[in-house]
Amino acid sequence: MTTAPGRAPNSSVLPAILNRWSPRAFQPESISKEELLSLIDAGRWAPSAYNMQPWRFIYARRGTAEWERFLSWLIPFNQFWAENASAIIYVASQTITLSSRTGEPSPLPTHAFDAGAAAVLIQIQAAHNGWATHPVSGFDHALAHAGLELPEEYELHAAIIVGRQGNIETLPEALQKREAPSDRNALNEISSEGRWNASTQTNID
Image 1 (cartoon, helix red, strand yellow):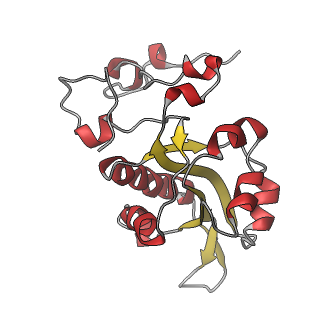
Image 2 (image 1 turned 45 degrees about the horizontal axis):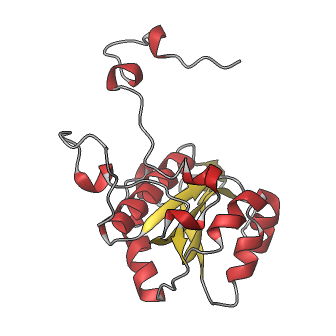
């Protein structure tokens, strides 16, 4: 299992959740298809509206023919550190389906919520198995959508970078300072009972 030093050791939250964090330092190590699929398999068990399971995960592994192509869609900053990772998983979800009653296209309003739930399970399973993950939104969505040959009714959300956590000294000094588990807002800042609490609002300038 991966570990996240300094994170709420006395918390009642499951260690598998607390120990998941998003490093950028990776070892240039390969991952077998079987091992990667064992992580993605965890995502299959996520809940989804009407059990529609709208998520799709398209992956490439280090050392395979698809690796450089998947890497090229990331923005340069993310390419810099992700090139040492073991796999990249692009996360997409189906936005519409055919209605069982009318046969007409019908929107799936919770498709992104459902795909996010599945993606989190993959990351928790990875942490449990000793793999680090770092989800990113910094990539060329149009190029990746086309390159993955996704149908029009699928939306691309994120890429999950997967690998063995590496030595912090492989990163530039500026990134070394950021290579630590991040904190979270206090529970009373993100939750309220009965109605909206204005004090929890995040200001957007």
